[in-house]
Length: 433
Image 1 (tube, rainbow, N blue to C red):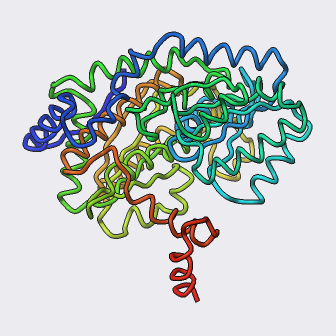
Image 2 (tube, rainbow, N blue to C red):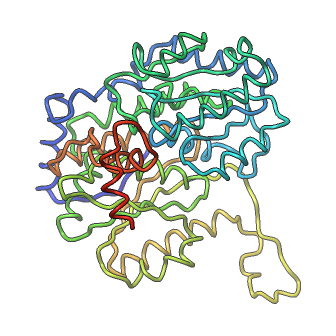
């Protein structure tokens, strides 16, 4: 079971208790979007089987690459899980290779993707509630055209799956028209909380990983995280980070000592940044990969402005074993490490870094998991989602809306010449001159 070392003061624990009551009572701001609380143990078995069946079917068909198309919460959870679980160099895949598209508008990226899949058998998962979000919609046009050109529309329908709204929207209409199989994004689950819906489960299953273990880890963690108990790790985390925020620590850095967790940090940044960054409030979420970033960001973290605190994800057991060999010449002076496991050195680097940063005035919290596997990832996803809801309610903001993300879209649509935006376009162009 996951462990934490957070030690907030009693007054902040009480604030977190009150916020948890609001969350559990489902009467707070944004309460229409609390479906994620029921997902770990309440996901219908037919959804799990449906994801597993498509994975098996595509593998039997000889699909080599599945292109998952989505942006924000529609891809970050799956990307985080696959990066964490996969071989760092793409070897020994248990399932189909999964690549991602539609999370940017780079011409070079998407042209390069077409280069990569040119000689490979391809399928696609397109994830969008509306089907009209610009980045994934553009990418889907490109990938859909490629699949239809190769296989024809009838076969393309068996190679494209949509994860979308249950009844409305452009993608739902297209899916009905073309005969795509579909999975539903629940109306009461927002994108950044959707990793335990088919948004995350289908890509993870296609890649060959155990979504039942993922859900089991999340379910076990949910039993703890929604309990009104002083030992609740989500409650303690939410209390600690708000106490630090009120003391002047405005930036939280999520730290890992395993590069496979890099994209977990990206998922975490969206979760907290989009949930708390509003009304002129919120802790700024950042992430680093140690020991790599100790050689780039380490100086600032150690001695820069004291507005930071760190939350370290500490992994108890590596999945592989590798020892450091002896060198008779010992020119690097490292023979004192001969015979030691590389992971032992990594843990000592973690311990030494934590102490150094504490001594440098950077509060340091720790979340410990046994290993990086599906079960433990489920624990982490659920811990942070629950803590996010509690933390935002302590802060006094709605955790489940994101009004600020629309501003850039309006400007972009105007500059691209979208009908109905002509007046805005003229004003914007004058500002850019």
